[in-house]
Length: 263
Image (tube, rainbow, N blue to C red; front, side, top):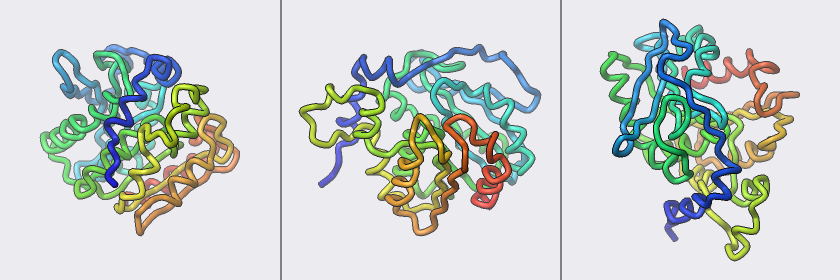
């Protein structure tokens, strides 16, 4: 039976979920400008554009479309992108509505729907700049949802999927947010459908998670790995790392896993 992901996601647009799930922070286009960072805007609705930040390293290097975590903005990656650049990886970081340089206000359904035009904008950006390397999609934490959404719908366009600190089932997410009462009448809510979509994703997949993740338990990452339909799948669970300090506790292993995966 086909799953109506759109209908399942609309239930997540409840105001009580919005205030518990999203922590937007705005930042102007000129903030923390770096010489090798290029601001790029993708129109997603009338008078609303998503701000993105492209960090080019090599024209023939792998290209990563990256959806960041909650409470972050694309310019935050000014400090992380150089680590990717050392490996010859081009990083294209996308915000969400209401975050960073973007207009509008975030909702669960708009975050997923906007990922599709963001992919088109990312592809156009690579073409305009003459970048010819393979294309990957990556999502961290909240960003695992749009990343998995794109991998699920456009497998032929991506060489691989990377999920960092991602969540699996809607039920476990609802319990963490303390909103189970909103779904008492529903036996198995769909939500973002990460666990359901990843079953049908067959492109190479890399799962990264901190063993001591205090926000999204490592078990969620293991669930995504086990459910993944990819024949080629890898995982990296970093000892002692929580949700926001993976690079502090495992920078070498983290970057080595991504570099090898994208080669």
